[in-house]
Image 1 (spheres, rainbow, N blue to C red):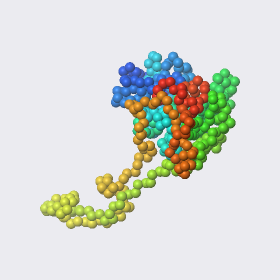
Image 2 (cartoon, rainbow, N blue to C red):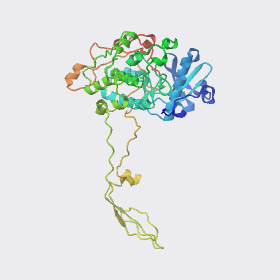
Image 3 (cartoon, helix red, strand yellow):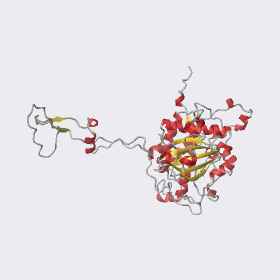
Image 4 (cartoon, one colour):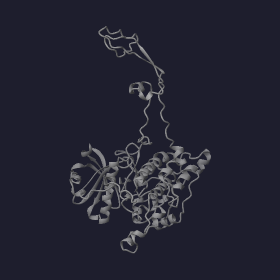
Length: 471
């Protein structure tokens, strides 16, 4: 029996006339945006932040494509990106960068989306000048990212470009997944192209043949085994490895060497200052075999997550007295209203009725849910927390729209195993290693140019203020 076909409105599809309808023409780059500032640059895009009076003078991010540089295949990818963001908005997914609109003019294509004032995770490392403690990574990054990826994977959607630069931090410190330029639905397409960022590619992606061989007909697309959602698990594992160590798990002087190390599974040793739970968690995500690599649901049950992200206990009902006195008055035919109680506790009464009090005994704990909000509030009862609230607290000193700029040159302070041994407990506070100043810069440019990168040379080439792309 054939599998049921999903309804049309349950798939991320962009209307064929989207760029020729009123939906895409009621915006104007000159009229609807002010205080425009360039904040990033992609391979074929420019990203700006701007105030948008149409959206209540909200600051937004705008990704701009130059039509003269957009090829037919890229144009299709842009439409798919917009369709994905519209689909996520329709499904009201949390922890993804919000979509506000898309439009075009004679020269450019525009995507208007949420502006994340905290930048991305790479910017955060540059600001903090050190790797993150594994507890913060668990609470602030691993848990929310696994949660939203689990939702996407249940929808048969894969992101295909998880990395530091594509995980953003909003104005209140919550992480949000962004840049859906490579995102696709496995219900609509097969993932047979070796796309993504080399340093984060899973071995099954590295093994895919080049697109040129498929286009030329040397290899049939039907002969290529498609990848699946496990590529996101691998890429998130690389991201978490970077956050807790300050380096990549697979390094090389250029992209071919990085690919060879990934294919050979030459995983750099994890430092001893990480707890066994954290090390096991990262190794599980970087499992070489696709079938053995755990899912998001399994990783959310991992001891590393349970150790730092235990769910809060359910609130207990407030203690209410077991005997509640209710003053009731039977309707009368016309007598006088009774005198008010001595303690000035007024009870509803019917004028002319009896004022004989009636005492009702009940088990208050068993019926607390039936009490009015007033009684619950007076007795100290607290409501259950919002299940969609982020586990993150407000950011501490993160640079927002008007915050301090990211410095041009920053040195990382790494964890010191000697300091860990001196403290006598795992995960001491990160401390700098003398003479071990490692830098990060220009990764996006180096990846596009085909060269690899290493921590020891990251900041030496930084030529412009670090303002990462809100993609």
